Length: 504
Image (cartoon, rainbow, N blue to C red; front, side):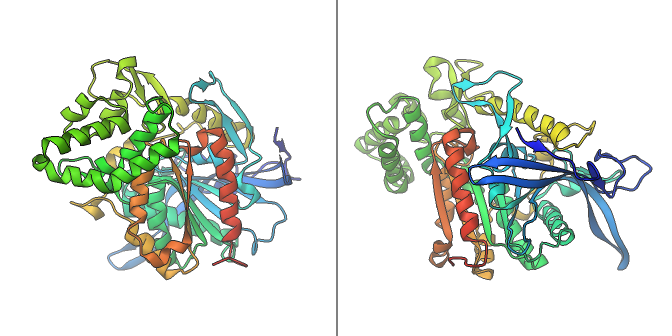
């Protein structure tokens, strides 16, 4: 178990008299951060570190009719920071991490991969029953970099101040600006401007991270050493199955093939053999087939039906009736329909009973069902018992209100697209490196879609990109062999790109 050792003065808060991050209606909002000391045994030796968890008050400039009114508090943002004791801040990297949604808290990366403690829930086909467990994570990225986990406004315990409007933060640009301000504030208060800096995001968090890199560098002068993009989505057009957009159908094909292989639809073949065939067909023949429409000859159509059925594990009749276009929500419910089971979207290794054997598509994601309870229970126990943060507020694992209200007005009449922002950040900062992590069984942000995104970057940027593929899903680290390997890959990435002696 992790050894918790209070400071000489005991647990203490900064800028607030109580350990709770809550404020009263009469008091002005103030930081409420609890500090605790810990040790963790790892293969490289013991880590002695300090956690600081709670809420940080976010301020914004107030200018009305050209009149300056100073800076006013606008939100209380929940963070958890881990800093290695007695480390040189000039040499010690720091990584800022968050998940996506929009509307997700950061507990997934925190308790699944990066943090010093992690949830133990089992895996596909071998899930543990409640109340689950919490164990040390000797592979934590804290061995290589300090960590700051951020819950964007309206997620986790993050809230606007009394009288504020949550919707003001629920949008593409507002979100980037608020998360950027949290990072700037922490870096300034902790005197970490000369530390190597990384940003890690997962899912929509990769969309945020790519745009955030440009914002931090151009607006705040805060240059990064690296971006860690796990289960990335940089162009929402790759997952748009609306009529006329055949791109999504072709790019999802390798994911369908991987899922079919996992569920026994490709006996006698390795996963790599199946993926090679699916990637080749998706890259060349499949787009041509779909572009031909009714101009396909009967023989060409029959060949396409046979090939797609073989790769996806679906029946030729279904592929024919789908007009060669397999939509992902329908695939999740169709692949194992004869077993009356649904495969997961976030992680297609997981299956669950279908609500209806004749339903057009899944009614619930069995992989999301599997992970929500363990992660929520583990983190909320950890937050109160081990980090010392108590609050009567609901911890919003995923805020549905955020998702409903989210604004992409910057991309009106077009798909959300941040590849150009990532490219601009890399041109501006010739030392910015990017790590991509992909799960073959990820049906939310499929790996082949993400690779198509990256193909839009200029060739001169490619040497600063690296790609890692895992036999796992959207939350890559749920698969324990992947978690161990991915932890090593991330530690290596941070080590190689921490500035002094950077190979680039």
